[in-house]
Length: 471
Image (cartoon, rainbow, N blue to C red; front, side, top):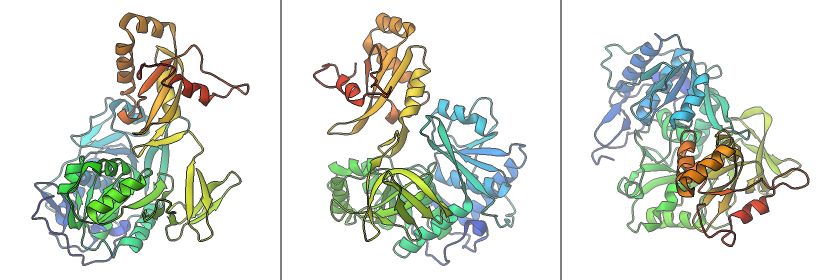
């Protein structure tokens, strides 16, 4: 973060997404920044106007938005919403995975960090437009304007989650009611992507509505997190990066730290506290639910506390049910999260009951990985499961080879075969979700009910079974 960049002095109340672009900010009000440049409120209005005019010339009605730069993302999002067209947010930059979603959209808006998709019209989002006139933007109908996000589904196929801007607007208001006073006049740095619900809300939409400037680019390394720290800065992060701060010894200051996307180990929370004098504020939720609850780990067994307006109960299987103004104010939403409710309204989580897991805050479908393995000519069947080591949670895969796969293995050897297998998977799957270890088996072990026997699968990867860790 540039040392000369000063926090905006808040002069307005929280803005609704409905009339955000008509807010009466000073034209020099800073919206976003990187190491060399600042984008002002007037520039945002100009860039949205220019992008809106450009996409209005396309007949496409379903527009996918995929960028690495958060300012360009904000420009594209607001332009699409004001165009009256459908907004699609892919959650994965991998070329093959993005191409697989191509049937879901007619046009891709992107920046230089995202490859265009063959067979679909693509348009690169420009900034610093010299647009002479800035239009008066119509008031958005928040209930009619929708955003479609994609997340890992239990079927192995990316699952489309449709949310109205009204639901997102309601959640932004809740976040501001809880933390707005504490974050007054702050700037936002982030280590997480805006393509997912957490980053979408915390690093782009909430800052836009509250008048807080946000960074265009992610902080990728612990050293960056330390060097960008400031009393006037908030860090939107994840357990994956906070855990990597264990080697840092210099002290720094953030106004607040947020963490979401997966469990934050108690020791990592305490290390962050020792470095920044603040415990991370952990937020629990999902793409479907948005934020559900929050906590700070003053003790190792700290319970979660529901956000204002969120109600919770358990079903007969002990899984959490929710009623929330930013999920569905009228109906209960059933999760697959095993839970224990306590008398004071707080709760503790006991894990997932489906085949969706999280590794370093990435939501991963074991079914999807099996599907990608099984579609290869080399493999007849696969079984993927998670394994916890002292260092990390990772994935193992037992595979039944086809005749073509057996021939390939014998011709090039195990080492090259595993490398080629991983290379194939990278066309579809993010690196964190690729199994670290594979075993070739004659059959996937089943019990008398035809269900996979996890204990036998796990034994295949035990040290006593095979001394070769990646074979």
